Image (cartoon, rainbow, N blue to C red; front, side, top):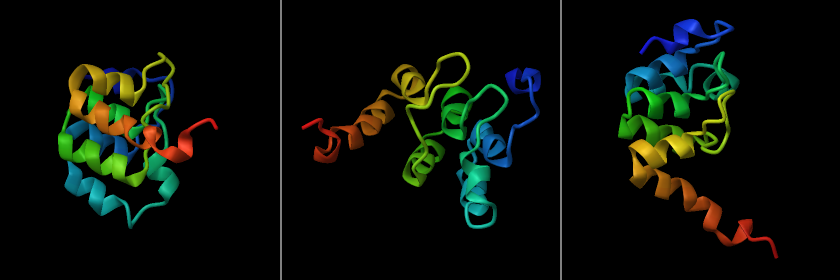
Length: 110
């Protein structure tokens, strides 16, 4: 896939590159060494590294690692896609894991 080459701004970060290639080891290397905002940033199309991982590499260890970091699975990019919607299509077991925190008592409306 070469979509990231066509983005309106050149903001494909190192975290996006590692997620794109499904390289959990690089993600683990980056976390203590770069600013947290560099990990959680969005690219030119508004996708976070979690959505990038799910839409390209579909690497389960990388996806789980990004979720454990607290990456937002429900943030939408400019096309209205979220990591959750992508997970429903490509890794349904991950989609179920994404819903677990939302089902906790703290998120109930009463």
